[in-house]
Amino acid sequence: MEMSVRKFGFALLIVGMLWLIGIQLVVNLRGGIRPVLQAQYDLLEATPKAVYSKQEVEAYVRNTANAVFDEQPLFIFPGVVLFAGGLLASRPARTKSAGSA
Image (cartoon, rainbow, N blue to C red; front, side):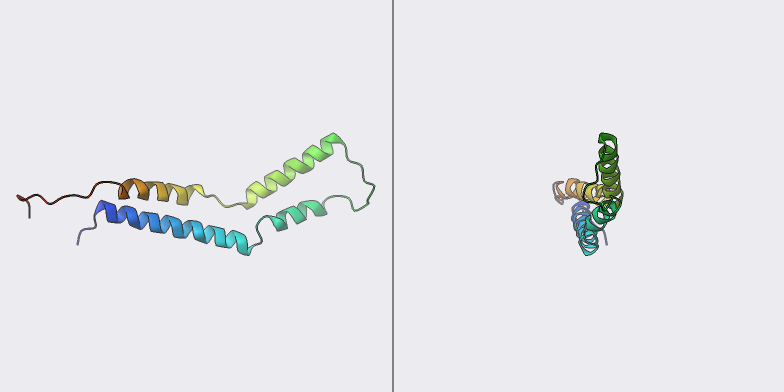
């Protein structure tokens, strides 16, 4: 039984979409980036009159941005699967010629 290129493309679209849904579900179940931001916030001094230099603020912002980036999953792989599936699914269907059977 032969699977056509278009059917394979649609299968890739479904797999890619399910993959993205799964990634998003996992991110939401973990609470998104809230735990990362809370951990970074806990690194700050607890005194209400704390004064930070420009370099300290830049370092905190950079560390927080890096921590958030490291926590997020890569969406490139399911995106590539979706792209490939879309390309394959958009191909025109083969028509059977009278000479071939």
